[in-house]
Picture 1 (cartoon, rainbow, N blue to C red):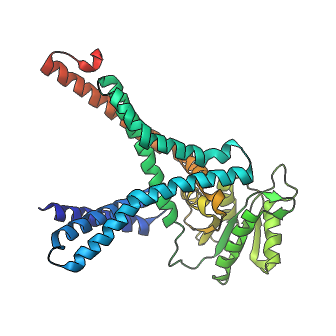
Picture 2 (cartoon, rainbow, N blue to C red):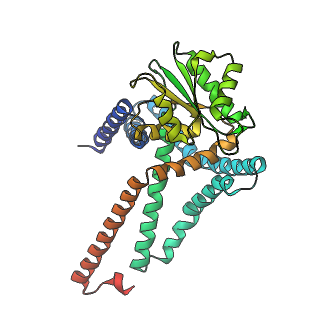
Picture 3 (cartoon, one colour):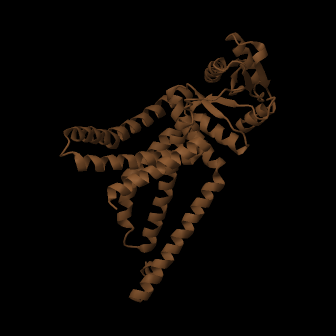
Length: 355
């Protein structure tokens, strides 16, 4: 079997996995993993096709050149653009929101990524002579790569989960609350409500559920302020349901579900783009099927908030990722022991222990 055919078979395999997860339940990190794997092996297969037929078919050559330009863009221009975006985002959020630890997430992330890509490989030059130090270096590298892959997959899954091309008829549209300014909604929360109203208007007979309790520093409940804003936007009062007991996203979803007349009601969660995927994962852990819609958010705020959401996702799925890291650690230790035994048997000593 040729390499070309092998790559094509792997591409078909990942495409099948992606479509299966997309159909079964897309609120799954494996959606992002399978999507990225599908794109990767499709690109490899197309490279084989271009290399094989470019001499016989000029059109294939030109397509290949366009593809090479695209690859050059992805390898060189895109990473540079991402670095600049991180720094610009960091500057803007500190300028507008103040110098606080939570506002430095994007800056800290890009500094760590640059350090990992630029300086971390050079550390390997000082560890390779010692098998112990080299083993630690390789282990740390693998752990960091794991979390980078999880982060990229999380981004892909988050993006795919806010795309609803053929949504079914919805019975309820649940708008998740956020902080208030006195008795008024913030611009961020107003954006969620306007998005919820747009979706509600596309599903005649549906109801809007405004979900949000009253914080210790709030004059009224978020649900009350959200309802008032929706009424100002022309929504009929009979189509608005208030859920004013929740204090976090999990309770938003759980308490809103209790207000639905039918246990099988179809509903959508509306929040900001960066928050949609984690909200959907929470709904899945609660056993509720739903879809999500993202409300527009100011760009300077999005990146920092997305990183915060990713950290929240890791905490939510901490048991799963802990099992993976522990398994990786055990496998790595077993591999190190196997190498040690190999050296003892074949060379009469254990260089790993000597170093």
